[in-house]
Image (cartoon, rainbow, N blue to C red):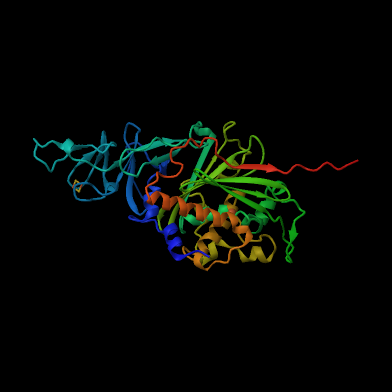
Length: 412
Ligand code: FES
Ligand SMILES: [Fe+2]
């Protein structure tokens, strides 16, 4: 059971909290590149309880600024996107992507406008993702990850806003046992079924067969790794602080790989990134990413086409499909990926934001409990003056691993 003060440290994301300071020590993915159109309307967004605008100048460069105009706070989401910068519609200050004020009609002509500053944030754009440095002070070098030096056609990133705390999507990947139950039928119905279940596991009294895993955990300088071993497979998941989780998809040397990034918007809303990549070549039509996302109409909100999912409609749960035995969870998406994700969102959002002080954890929650402890340790070390854990490491070779167990040779 978790102490209340520990839970608060993990879930309170707003300005002035230790978690807020910790996360601002890292580059943060804030927008998909396609959300910013050269010369188009600025895009308003909230991260860690603060409001920003992203925009793309006519020269194609992406910029991120505080939403409030530095003069008297009008929203820069309303600004004109002019050559050389954003111009506030209220009194006409014009600011460039570096945060320099270019014109300030409020001041006498002899005034030196270069002495005024807007709050612009350094931006790194690549693989269809706009990352911002929201930490103040000079930005550290961008930390390389497994996909951040790949050509764009090797990577696919999709987002949605989940109505949950930022930690919950990570916890569901630390608690990978849930895939044996919540995703049991979805996994079986997909081509992943043959590599996910051994068929030699346990059987529940409703006929559902599953494999019980052994879980091993180990701290790393950047976070932790958890390995799950069951009768058919060994998987290794790697968490990278503060919010990146490499998870497995399918086995095979050329299979797509994946990670999730869980960015707090505020305590109750999370910008969830699904990133798929392939270091051996462009994403192929029969790979996991394209099978799941190629037909999705809006990758900025990749579940939107399936309709609203809230408590009022049981997150889209179809009870008739359950009664007819067509679906174990009641979630029927249009691809394996949207089915799995619909199942996850249903479970996560139904949990509520708090409640870790009342849980009864099981052996299968070992990685979950370890992940929370590791995060608490890293946040507390940061508060005590340590640099953000793993922030300056090259993490290009950190990714998930999915190995099938060797089949024992039958003698004779
Ligand atoms: S509030 Fe933006 S220029 Fe005055
Ligand atoms: Fe899941």
